[in-house]
Length: 261
Image (cartoon, rainbow, N blue to C red):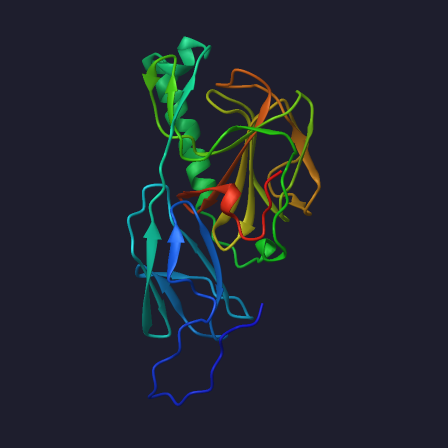
């Protein structure tokens, strides 16, 4: 993708990127380009800018906006379009995973802290720059952002995309990256893998029945990283594909260039 580089004197304000949108949806990722070497901030936070000027940012499920994107001292306000979030009822979940006792709750907190730390990685790699593919092909069984009610007990919204496939189905890397977390038996998410794509973007895969990668391993797009399962809090075999920009959860179905399976 071409950048919006313009030749200007130092006293003239830098032009905004031509591919920076004026609006974006809740849960969406933006991949834009600034003049190479130009500093970029999103809501005051500096972000990586590639040698070709590429930078990224996202809007979470409940983001109201606007997001303020500062490119070389010139600010653009990106409006965030709200979405309608349906209620999703999930029955038959083991009660102990819905309302765990204190000692299990403490374990969950420790495990989630490790996952959060892995998501905060901020590498200058641009593994996301070649687009994304679906990790598996199957029926969408759970959509990002839907309010979840487990056994009539309201819980947090669904943080990713659920894809129903048979247990043991190979799960492929949607883009290249580095494995930053790989554990076979987390209490809520079971077999869990995090794949960092650079610039704060990462994929997570939950409920895996098998993990074929290890922390620090470099994987290519399409490489098998594990197998679908129903470990942790799950009622049947599927792949949970979550996508983050640092701590901001995004909708895999809205990734640039992705097509519905």
